[in-house]
Image 1 (cartoon, one colour):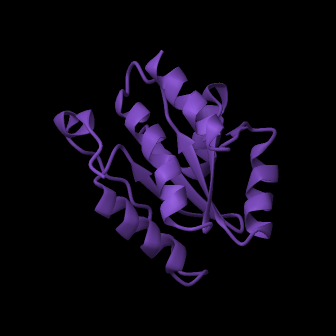
Image 2 (image 1 turned 180 degrees about the horizontal axis):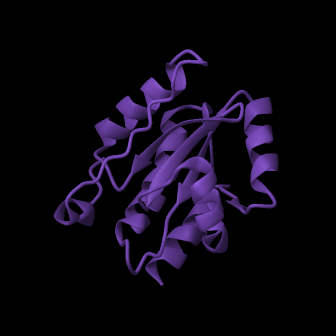
Image 3 (image 1 turned 45 degrees about the vertical axis):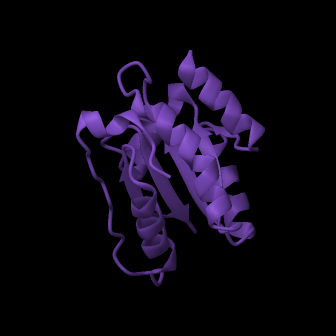
Length: 148
């Protein structure tokens, strides 16, 4: 139920839900706008309660990066297929994609400064460099709140 509320909040922020059938259109539109796509692969919020926290933080990150990011939520039924495509091993994860390249992943809930630092490094690195996949697992007790 809580994730449904968070998902509705994402929709209010203009974040669409993407599926296997629609993700390439979304990625292309982000590229055309000169932005980096950020996809949320939330997973089952009953198994991964921090998915709710990540869903709350995503619109704030998009705002903080002043139009450099375009966000979407991966449809629950397509998380497995798109997770394989983008290299998701941990949920929830934010997937950063630009010009057909997966720039990196940020897993679980993180401190605000960690998001800002990692996203800045991922979107500002020269294209063509080896993508640094950033997957971090935090202890369960840290996933209880969001530090902004």
